[in-house]
Length: 243
Image 1 (tube, rainbow, N blue to C red):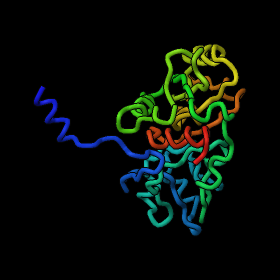
Image 2: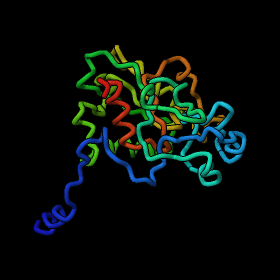
Image 3: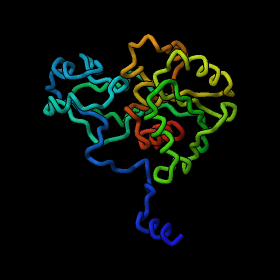
């Protein structure tokens, strides 16, 4: 017992006082910035996922491997800003030059009834388990998204929204739809991680069945591979009541 108490004192205060305004280590690959003079063709040649094109960089396809930044550091920089979630798929495309992502990332809000309590049913649809681990960490003592009224529930009957991780394998497609249909209205869909948004590294696989995703309009896109707990909490809180 004494050893446990001593260990607790040595650990110190572990909780993040305000996850919405926390500061990440400079090594964290967050929101990218592309210089105005960047050659997008050269950057695209360094991207293993074809996330860069004439339009810029697509956060919904990017797995934040950093290959482009290591090869052309004068053209692109991954900042340590974790605030990357948005309410619109098109907003995930980062163009060249100055781009104030934070001002337009999330403009829509959920109905007032969800401002202080938002229950999520998590569905892992064929992912590698990285985003699932980060989603689980969002509820731990460090991040504690429960302080904002956000919680993961065991039953879709108790959920306000479905939060999807993974690229949606064919084997999980039916279970995903069944979960959605079991949820009471009004209900919402949140896509967590690159795989959920676009299929990620599996996007061209015949083992996927993303048909259902083309029939709904997600309320939130949280990029990342995996999505960081701070990105998850900031994004969900932003659509609940804004900042």
